Image (cartoon, rainbow, N blue to C red; front, top):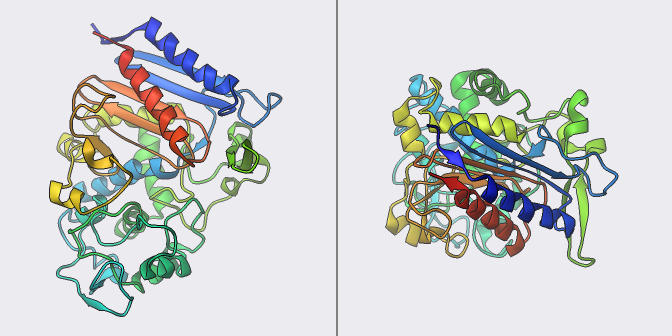
Length: 399
């Protein structure tokens, strides 16, 4: 018998989400919980900020932001299995901008005080975000490397990257690394580099590789870096909280969306990045839990879903408070390393995006959970919503 979900507990998830919409925390949401052959979907509220906007629908389109990272990881592993990339080999042949790196003598020191890198950057370094450069967990502009990344237009953030891939890499390559390759974990930027690497190693544009090798085989017909005119009526408004007024304010709407045209930089890390639907992401989640569905080997999927970060590296790599307490990093997403108040066992894998969406899969429970909305992350309330939904998905398990 296929594992089931409790309809009573699913109704509680629906009620909780409806409460958020009715209170005005967010105008609309699509939530999906699946186990075995059972798929539960909530479509609540509207695609825009007012009650007169189009109602949310099952195929509404959402900006994924950093939820693109697991997709980029899968694309990278496909090229490893094709024999076009060495998982533990240097990337210099495809990314000459990153060859012969210099590394800051101290992470917060002046840019001209450097030492040679002890070794080359590898594909695994990029997948595990240990290649030497990324988000600095300090106030913006506090350290020289932060200011340099901002001036070079390669710093992590909510903004879209505006330089084409070759120019992005030229600018990135002009900077020293903050850490020696393999020694520290630093969020985000490695996945922007991986998108360029996939394109160069495959001889295809990154967007074409994803469409032909991943999205089309999985039936992810609505996932892309831009939204064509005939689908704009399904694109949700993106919004954030105006701290002065306490009201939600739109910052990207279908009428003049940044996503209505192809980007200069197709982002593998999600800085701008992909647009998708809950249904397409369910297909991706099913692939992860079915051992790759002939797109990847089960061994590669298992490595993707396994924590790759040693404890000493975690201790030396600050991120959000408490992140490493029960989490690690696989390829493209976080891995639950022990029971954490959400899942009763280790092994949950997933990630979220700064524009609101999140997902996870649990291989032990055959559980897939996807939460889609477009309220830009600005504080604890955003994490609270994801936490509430995730706990609700586990409460719905019925063995």
